[in-house]
Image (tube, rainbow, N blue to C red; front, top):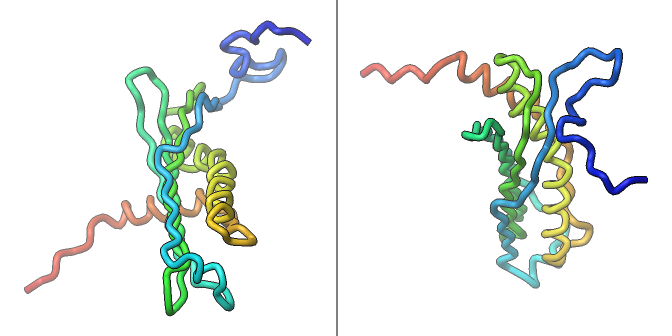
Length: 168
């Protein structure tokens, strides 16, 4: 065991005999914004049955002047019954990524599929913790999200173009 840090490029240096390939490194993860509301507590903690869940997922990525990329994953979860809002969680979770060996046409899919896929388990844990701390047992656990499917749907929507204006 050593206290020496590995060289800065160790994560991207290929092992001898292996070709260098595209990849990314996560340099930081952070909560940019977190909101948890339990507006009808303590009554909301004693509801019968399962509440209806409304889930929202958004991904955003942008380049920075230093050559790194910021990726944000916005998750919103609203649980409600006919009588009340049970809880409402909004989380904006981000990561700072360095890309290496990625072809220009592959940057966007990498940033909007693979990077959110990496961030998701940490965001999921934050939401579970917030609902648990809010008094809900068991805590709310998000099901895995198909980021590739979301990306493909977005690309198809863009390809279809804007909606045609109504003819009067």
